[in-house]
Image 1 (cartoon, rainbow, N blue to C red):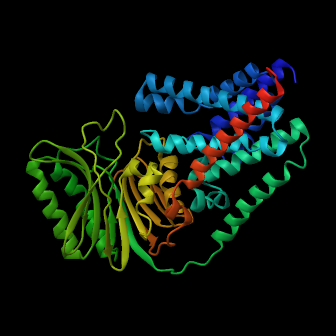
Image 2: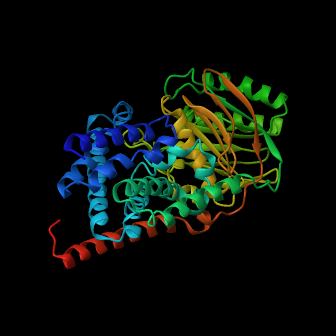
Image 3: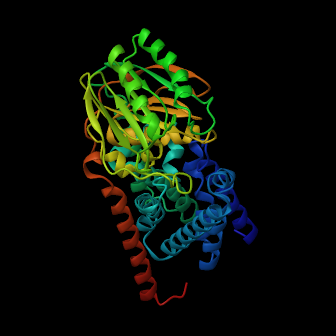
Length: 464
């Protein structure tokens, strides 16, 4: 392949990856996106392999730049783009070296183990959690995401990347025998997915719920009375319709110390009078001036609150982070509560393993509505519970423990969406019990394969 052909291959991979990492991915593209740049890298020099990978990595940011600019400005965009270029450059370099120095059956696993391992490391250390994982590109392909119940999001990424790596090695090295094991692994993962989604649920009971979103308010309203007057008629109508669960979005109002008591009393009163479970998010300010991004849960006889634990960097610095999960029984259903960005963090969501339903008040940015809702949906697959997510400037979403979106509707001014929520969780999944053991194992295996490559190069005495 000539130099120009390799550059074009890197650009093609970058373009396909850009769509796969975008706010509205088309799932088949991720399976083939890395292949052109891997093929180019395998036949290139070491420096060339790194350069082609870096080109693909930079181009992969193309469709997300405006979104990141909106959220954080130019500096985060530059940092993320540089990091993406370096990571993809390093992976292409590693794939090229392994394909020259290792047995083909081992070389084919370098790319997928690096992808899964690096994503595991990022999810554990980034202030944005698992955001940016290639796994989210597969949310419309239900069989592919079921493997998350075993290995989390990194397992999805591993399978997708393994397919691309196998294809690249077949084209570059005619490695038919080496492709057998990867082909069986991919087939087994998809076979497991098809089998899992066909399993009959232990219970078909549902919860009659209403998700309410008030996009008519600009920002966080300081006028509790206006907010209450907007929501109370919708809550009353939902109760009249026989609804038992009402979920309002994140930060429906800023509760100053003088308003806090009235808000708690008014929400508690309607929960008691209409025998409802009401969950609502608020910017809750204490007498001492501390502020919490808080979700209140009101039942007939009591109320409780949950404090958001992961804030959006640069946008929610005024809030004190929470430190504890909140779970409770209501009507024979075990509920958990998290707020918006919390569900970007697999480890936090795994702490709720065993609940039946996660209630998630949220507030999105409009353009990221689909993707951010699906990030929460994947937490449900990982841990086997249903998700009820009511979002301002987003998508009101209900999903089951298989990742099936059973109800969804865009938010809007005075949106009230009646839904049926699967009431029984699927029980503790392998991932819920053992966490990211798969992802960390892939990182360790990637390190082992790279170490083997370095040793093989020194033994061969080549500077290649």
